[in-house]
Length: 312
Image (tube, rainbow, N blue to C red; front, side, top):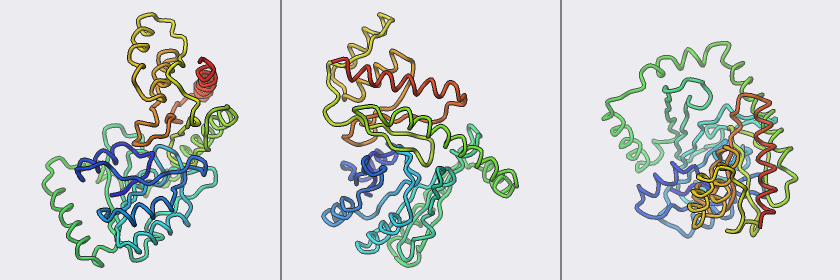
């Protein structure tokens, strides 16, 4: 199964475990709104005959990109040309803003076999009640895919811990007149936050940042060559400084920045190299509830990026 890079690590690590080999990925382009490099995808599919399916995440985690319908149509065209099936992670389907609309896979799938993965876990504030489901398209058009889906159904039937409560409640939530207003309020909040974060970071020398249009993540990439093993930030607590100085010696350069940012400010972000890619940067969320604190966080991140890049 070929998936995007940067990759949501649960997808990439699970696929590597299932395949028993290194995960194959297609590139997302930070210089083109984190849209997929479809030429890269096509070439990898063409010359890796072991690939049987394409994974799409839309809206994307970790980049916050929302793909236009033309890109989804090209995914489907590639799947049809090379007799592949598609898995589309649509967990964030309802979380899009800045005038972006998510095209569901069901709207463009045509004759390709596919699975859409959906969930309530990101749009409902219901801790401990994660619940997801899949929609299957065109299963009867391919006997091998139909057999594959039967194996998934059989394995799920063996599970003894069902999500009965959310399953019973979900239809009532989705049909409640207040639900759409709830989603719109969340999207309006993320849109405000995305604009604040982007405006603060977009002109910082040494990084590439795109406007977040979906989900609630922003991915910041360091330009090639701006990071080195001599850079650091001043850490006031000696014990913490000694620890960070020790553990940051032989790690990826973006992870080194993440350690020093955490030690200096208490702000925790995730290194981009942790998302199955060689690009260096970090993912940060738009989830802080206080508008004042949110802006303070991103002003601090901006200042620390500038200070870190000048430190050596």
